[in-house]
Length: 148
Ligand code: HEC
Image (cartoon, rainbow, N blue to C red):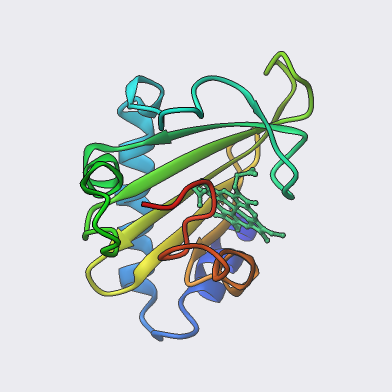
């Protein structure tokens, strides 16, 4: 709990409004709880795939309708508000050895809201996380797995 509060407070730095961070964290967690594993996966990236990133030797990525819509539109535009991409990291090819669960959610106020939790549910990152965006800034609208 203390760690969670520290990371929430940390995420609030740039906006200085921890209430917003808590609200968006809750929204992201509600989305995750509602069953992201039933969401679509990007063509060519179905199931457990190899990763060269910090997210684990293997990963699996799900996208919600808003994010998929942007990729399918393929017009080079940014992801719309409400877009969410979720990634489960694994330390094995079978996808049994769970790493962190990460998510990026396009919020009206924050822009991309970064979220990460450990396999036992401890919140590691929530908000405007430079640890995430620094690496992801190489992607199209911060998305690294594909372009559109
Ligand atoms: C050192 C670089 C690096 C850092 C730091 C990083 N990521 Fe990623 N991330 C990647 C790469 C590369 C991919 C593309 C898929 C793959 O190869 O695993 C990715 C993919 C993702 C995806 C799937 C959507 C996409 O952009 O492709 C999510 C969600 C994600 N990362 C969340 C996060 C969060 C949250 C953090 C911070 C806690 C974070 N990442 C930190 C490199 C990074």
